[in-house]
Amino acid sequence: MEGSTKQYFEERAEGWDANIRPETRERLARIVRDLGIRPGSHVLDVGSGTGVLIPLLLEAVGPNGKVTAFDLAEKMLALAEEKYGGGRVEFVQGDIANAPFPEGTFDEVVCNSSFPHFEDRARAVREMFRIIKPGGRVAVFHPMSREAVNELHRSLGGVVRDHLLPEDEEMRRLFRDAGFAEIEVADRPDLYLVTARKPRNGGS
Image (cartoon, rainbow, N blue to C red; front, side, top):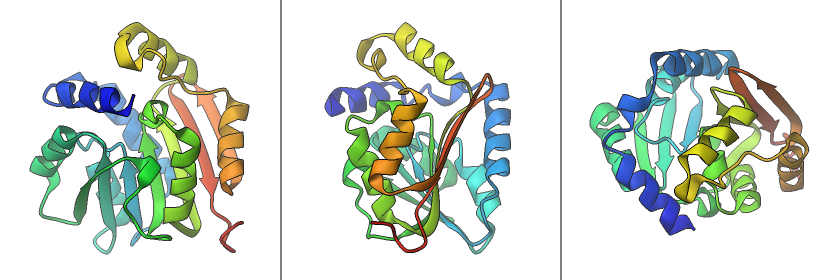
């Protein structure tokens, strides 16, 4: 499945930006702003794609912060690097279920519109827990409701047809089982958001 998912996004990389509507960009800007990411933070952008979040994250972390763009699809990352390379952004290709980062690397992990595409979600969430610093936060979000995400993926068909966001309790369980605390789920027409924090003592 991973290979098929990777191929799906590789094939669509070139036209990806043209399909991001202005209202979607506005919603994402509001989401990132409302997260209140601290200046100086090191943020991992999981499923960064062509980099729609990168300028928003760079603004949030400020001149002393850093953003790592991480995606399964090389072509997506290449397009992101064309736009935002040469600054405070590192570009890394890989699978979040086998994240190539040391334990406790990041202050924040954000995951925009990519969680449903993870093949092994439990392992992906455990890896997020491992690579985030104690006290750090994960934010999984979409600029639409859970129902709208799932309807969209079903309508697209193909490999993403069954890439659905789970029920709220299942999401809570995934993060709780990985060791996260302060798990919150919001679901409304313009936002689906899950936030969770790694305990400052590192959890279990």
